[in-house]
Image (cartoon, rainbow, N blue to C red):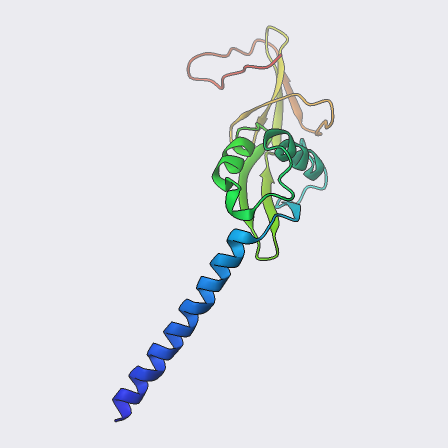
Length: 160
C-alpha cells in the first residue's frame, strides 16, 4: 500500500511538471520579442565594441527583432554572426520567459600593438587573435614596431 502511494505521488508530480512545461512551450511559441538586452561580461568599462554597437549589429543583420515571435528567432545564426566580429571573443544568445533577447558578450582585450615593416598596424589580443585598429577605442598597450614579418606561421593580418 505504501509503495503504491509513493508511485502515485511520483506519477502525479511528473505529470504536473509535464503539463507546466507544455504550457510554457506553447506560450513561448506565441510570445513576441519585446526587447534586446546586451551585457558585457568583461570587467573593462571601455573596449573596442560597446553594447549599443552590438545591439545595432543585431538590428542590421536581422532587421528588427522586436515584435517577432520568439520561436522564429534563429538564435544560433545570431550567435554565429556576432562571433565573426573580431572584437568579440565569445557570445551567448538566449531568450527569456518575458520575451527578451539576451546577448552576453566577452570582448577581446588587446595585449600589444604591432606596426610591421609595411607600416601596417594592428593589435594582438590576449587570446592570440589579430584585431584591426579602431577609431573608437585606443587601448594603452605596448607598441612593437620595426622589421616584423608576417608569414605562414604568424598571425594573418587582413586589415589596413
